[in-house]
Amino acid sequence: MPSPLIRRGIWAIGVAVLVIALVVAALPLFASTRIVRDRIAWEMSAWSGFRVTIAGSPRIEVWPKFRAILSDVTLSQWTETDAPPVIEAERVEVDLSAMAALQGDVVFSTARLVRPTIRVQRAANGIFLPAIPTGGRITRSIDTARGLVNADPTKPDLSKLPADPFGTVEFRDGRMVASVGGKDVELLTSLSGQASWAAMNSNATLSATGIWRGESVTVNAASPKPLVLFAGGAAPVTFSFKAAPASFSFDGTASMSQNAYFDGQAKFAAPSLRRVLEWSQAGIAPGTAIGSVSISSKITATAGRVKFENTAVTLDNNPGMGALDFSFGDALPVISGTLAFDTLDLRSLFSAFTPLAPTGETGPGEIDTSFADRINLDLRLSAAHASAGAIQLADVAATAQVKNGLAVFDISDASAFGGNVQSSLRFDRKPEGSQVEIRLLASDIDGAAFGTAAGMTRLVPASTGTVSVILKGPGKSWDSIFENADGSVSATFGPGALSGLNLPAFLKHTEQGGFFALDDVSDGTLPMDGAELKATISKGVARLDKAEANSAKYKVWLSGIASYGGRGLALSGGVTQADPAAAPVDGQQGSNQSSFFVGGTWSTPFISPISRGVSGE
Picture 1: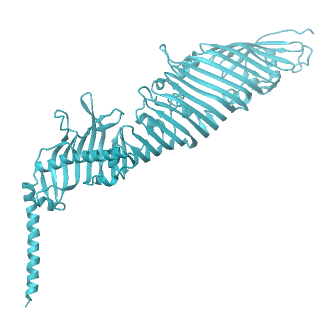
Picture 2 (picture 1 turned 30 degrees about the vertical axis):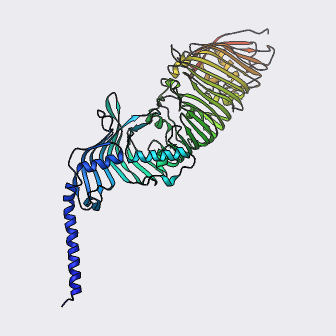
Picture 3 (picture 1 turned 120 degrees about the vertical axis):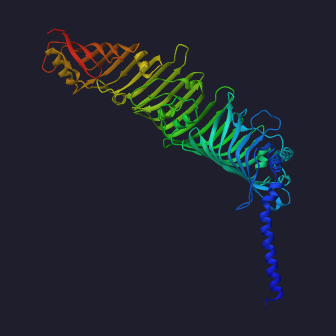
């Protein structure tokens, strides 16, 4: 027979099981009668500071968690009865404390908002934020912390911070909207994540994902002193933003006071700067291909200004160092700074702010100079090695300046072609249309190397010289600049050789008469003492005022016009024997002047003899 002690134990266990079963069975009854809709709404209002309304009756679940499921929940400002709710959710799931429910209290640690809509409005600093509640436990905790910060801004007494528990707020499949023209416009969609804040005086974290402007984004933020941060004090903060077009992270100290600031280390990276500009809707002219960019810098940000110090920049795998300063005033944003590179693609860099390259691969396109109305820029650059298209430069000093519709890009000093190069590109927006001015001064350069870079292979002086180009024209398109440009071209070269001209063969063809192509006599060079070119350009047509090459025995000269638009040539020229008594040319003696006409196009010029002079013999 079982002992009385065993029997009593069995009875005790049975009673305990029965009690637990009755409690579990009674929980929905207690919840439906004592944890009523108004009690839950009141508790949520007490925390948030918003007026909380629940349209449907709460549904209570016991297993696997004791929770209340609420439908059609809205959080609104108490003082703005006609305004739309700040937050509205199709469903809210609240994890409840069973023991508190049996005692008639509502205690919950986790709230899940399903398909919420969060309404935000643009603040004075341009950031979209939800409306701030006028009361509630969170607001009162912030007010308490603000008093501690005001009492000692540098080292507030953290032991006096409120320690009320908060918990976790989760959200799934939500959206963020702003009112534009009386209609809700979606800023973020597919918004999911959670905010965890165990107690008011503890650390807090936020993680969220969503879709912004068609791209999936991920945001993470954390602070060990969030209450101090919300109260306007300085607190450590980490923040990261990741998306396919770009990523950004910050680790440092921040303050959200009236004189807000950020101070710490920041990193930014993008596989394509052009894609970032288009995605961010910065208003910069699209189309130009810009490569990857990454920035790592010590950052100090205050209201209206961001300073980047000890900045490491990498553009298209070209690293550089320097400092940048961003200012945001009532007018246009201002970017200024100095950057130094080892290698640099100048055209790629400048095209981030200007239409310096064609919009497509098929040919030049329209020039959009509206960038000059959206930004003020003062950027100073240096590079040990740089490229501008096919041109290679060294020891480069350059500037990029954009202000009030005027954009100027200068290479104030650079080594190239064995000499020194200075150039300037200027866009000037005027009521009658944009004007573009191009200037180039190449001093003490190798003429052959310069000609190769410029795509010229005919009659190029292989000697040291100086080239000056000044062009100005309407900036509607790249072709229109050259087709309608006014300006001048001049060049002088010292002793050397004129490539692409077999003079004996040339003179022989002119003696024989008839047309012949310049290609037929391009298999030689002419030694020369010097060469000089002066041309005046009007509406895209160059008029040669002087074009001659001199050697000990001969002078070759040209005059006439050359058109850029049609690539046509209409030139007359001659070969003069400097000393009539000099040795004959190709065995022929008795003439000292050979005149000819040059026609055709730049790519296929042809020669037609005109007449021959007679020597004194």
